[in-house]
Amino acid sequence: MKTVILAGGMGTRISEESEYRPKPMIEIGGKPILWHIMKEYSHYGFNEFIICCGYKQHMIKEWFADYFLYNSDITFDFTKKTSENGNGVSMEIHNSTTEPWKVTCVDTGYNTMTGGRIKRIQQYVGNETFMMTYGDGVCDVNINELVKFHENHGKKATLTAVVQKQEKGVLDISDVGAVRSFREKKDNREIPINAGYMVLEPEIFDYLEDDMTILEREPLERLAKEGELMSYRHEGFWQCMDSMREKNMLESMWKNGEAKWKVWDNK
Image (cartoon, rainbow, N blue to C red; front, top):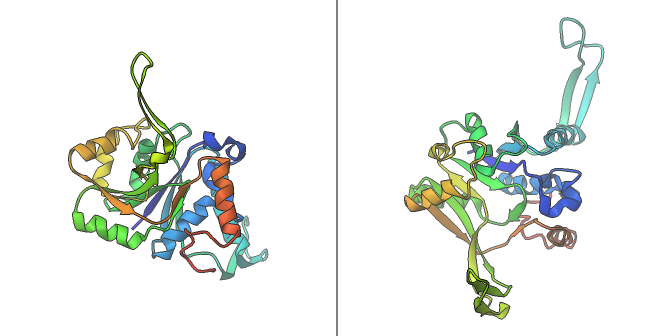
């Protein structure tokens, strides 16, 4: 089963880093957060990825090319030519410590919305069930259990829901600005949110119109109304990286050996 990762946004809320690189390429522990996400899927045996690129896409493509070269022993044989006109060099790979990944990086446009990016990679998915997640959040969800849940209910779409405590005061405000009610942050009410880590049937493409389609709006709302959207409740760790504070928190967890999303071994 293929995994689609949305990696084309600009990451404006973490502009201190994303000004220079795509948000999924911001590093945690010396590796892009995109790598961390892929490592979790790979841990459960899912090694084929489609990366939806956009903003500074060349940096994502170059990283994967360099990652393979830097983690391999290679012989470049300049005495052997690889084309009829004598151009090119023979290259032999002796040892490689890279993961057994097949990665397709697709230019899905600079300003394309989330649903539009998925629509653009339809030809690479084909008529198969696939997984999808965002390129800026890590968690320790059991991917195998998620897929099993999706297969058992037989609906068109599954999203992973995590519960977060509401830690801010909440206001109910009228049209004229009157505060009708106020809930203190000590209420700590738990609210389920969409954490990504979705499993989707190929029929999802019928719900995506064009580049301006936002997956989280009309498509998912329509699926919910039709009874075709299910949620897999995850009670473990999940954290997105929307700010420098969150980036630094993930970095600290990794450095201190407290990275709860690291379900793989040390290879």
